[in-house]
Image (cartoon, rainbow, N blue to C red; front, top):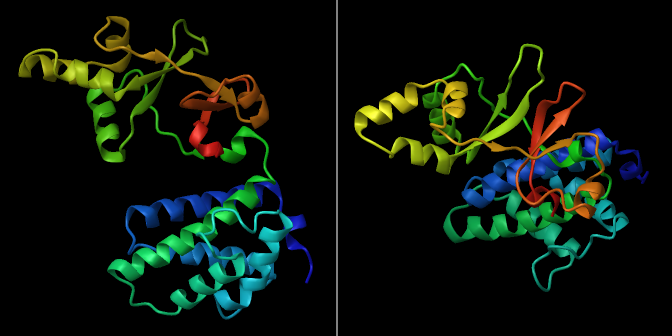
Length: 259
């Protein structure tokens, strides 16, 4: 069979990596929500196979060959299982739709193990910050109220919301981070009336008058090699990924995204 993995572009590898990570996170959060992870494996298998076939079994050899070519055949597989055995377990479980409780947890364990092997192999084909970042960052404008920051945090489970502090007209400004702890301090600092006054205040005014603390954000260029961040110890927590001279946010990255 042709070695399709050699033709895998960085953009394609990035797309598949994000697809696997998103599906894996959902399956780990809810063992009965494993379908997206199985579909992700099938979609990747179809890509490697070169065409859509009947199902996961038809892609097994392509998936195994991809992992072996990247020397990742043993990584993340449950103890005592070969990659082929793991692939077979996922394939058999895929054909049984009635998965609940312990059976669902076993399927997720095996499917996650397989996904981690494939993610690891995909990462070997990537090297820039933009390949590993989480895209689609939510930020706030200076004119928006702090109640908007609170809403975004609660709706999405965010610990930080970026805010661009701009001085003079034409000034590109600098990126700041409003943290959940800073919001908590502001909300509970005084009476109920003080709380409402705090939440009604515009972000830019609140930052300037000290009503809320906004810490300077660590920013990294999207085109920077990941190795440069690791070697220089520049990535010790959350960093905003910026693109171009305007330094607009295109993503966020943490050390967790690189392991």
